[in-house]
Length: 415
Image (cartoon, rainbow, N blue to C red; front, side, top):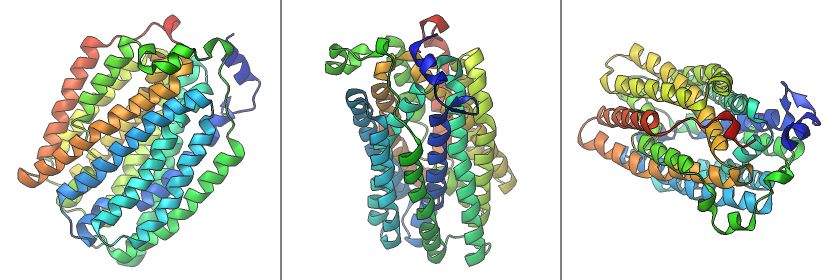
């Protein structure tokens, strides 16, 4: 039995896993409840209330995500150096929580960008250390399941947040097509509460995890972080970049639903459906990846993504949008946790924070040109154009994944 697995057995367990998995999931659940209420409908707030266009929506989504990515790179590397993953997670969650109430003061799109930017800086600080802490808290044989549970709880928070949002919107404006300013104001006020609770849970119940002695970082690793990573991991990052070039901000999925005639209340309920299918598939996908390998699950998810984006491009009726939102949730449920578990499979334990920083950094930095390009295509060509691009890039990434990247042997995967 490895040092890490032996240490895991000495801690109390929830659902058969180290308690960190549950409590980090609970933190994400509360945070996502808050974020879904405050930020998911930002494109409609910018579009309907502030009167900005699709290019501005793409800029807000892409720019905030890209700066988020820069912080993920540095926080991941820092967590490997100082061995304080929880500390960085607390700082990140806390900073995001402090930024959220300022959405009440946003009256121009620049203000929305500033608040969204601050929130994503907090997410950038916390995400890589948190993912590394999850990987540190579970053995190889349950790694996919651990990330699947975390993603499922995270997304359950989205279901809760969007359900609350739907109630608030219905109570204030009924079935209006556009989002109203008063509705959005109450979403922010109520949404701040679970964000505060998330920080308190993190402080009280999540514990730092030490690495096994055999995994202690070497001096050379800290001087030249990239040199410690395999060619397979670097290739994985390159393929992720290809995929993300067509995977613009999800703001455009929401705008597309409204563009096809869906009112705000139904868009909110569609997002609930999206997150329900996400939750339903996350844990089974993680368990399957532990047994069958990660690459095949990622390939399946990308295939579904390409079909869903093609569907968004071709859709003409609202019932089709309901089906597409459900399919989009299945894609997320299959890929999000499995893709993160795959990172841990490809790198040594002492380098996980840095590796997650690079992974999230590549995805986030690529999202800026992807989102700006999507906004330009929407404005210049048609609302369907960004989705044709997304489907095409997903197909190219799928081919590269299957042709160039091999699944590592289980005996060669670091624990």
